[in-house]
Image 1 (tube, rainbow, N blue to C red):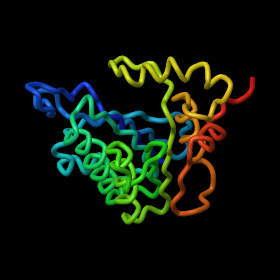
Image 2 (image 1 turned 180 degrees about the vertical axis):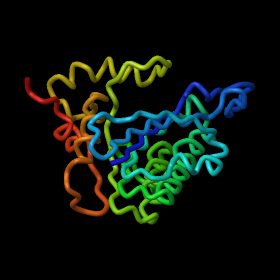
Image 3 (image 1 turned 90 degrees about the vertical axis):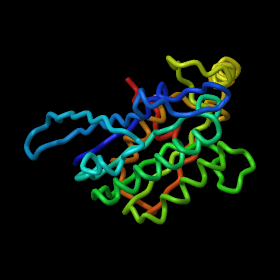
Image 4 (image 1 turned 180 degrees about the horizontal axis):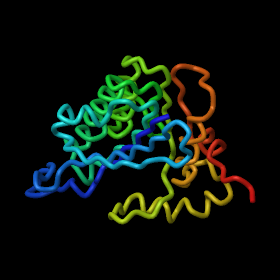
Length: 220
């Protein structure tokens, strides 16, 4: 199978002069890691592509010929402002899904968020829910949505609110691992493991506990 994974370079987002925008000198980059397993060759070939999010149509070829896609694009309102957040978490994600579908991708995996709801009064959850709803009609053979709670991960970039919750939720997570948070490693393992499980429903939504159970580290 041919698989691709996309991640957004959040460093390309900035806020200057009281208004948030995307810097033009730092390209909106899509790092697409493509692992290809040629017939009879157990060693994958890894290819990395870099594209400009503002001109994704010019890079349609990057999205062609893959069976499975993983989309984990995202930023925050604090980093990008309201318009920038919508642009990244909705517009870029939806466009990536459209190109993946046109390129032959049959199984699209989307990392969303716990509480995602297009009718929510909270912008973050509303945008997450809206992009889920907009991708579904594209008609992937299988569409898997992952809704993790607060991600327990040490980032290079500064996210004070997330850092605070990690410190507060850390002790709670050790006693109640699926209550309000989840290790990023668990999400990664769950997404890969779920890909290898035969499809059930055409559209599946995995909430935090299901992600945690599926992403448990193998016992040594």
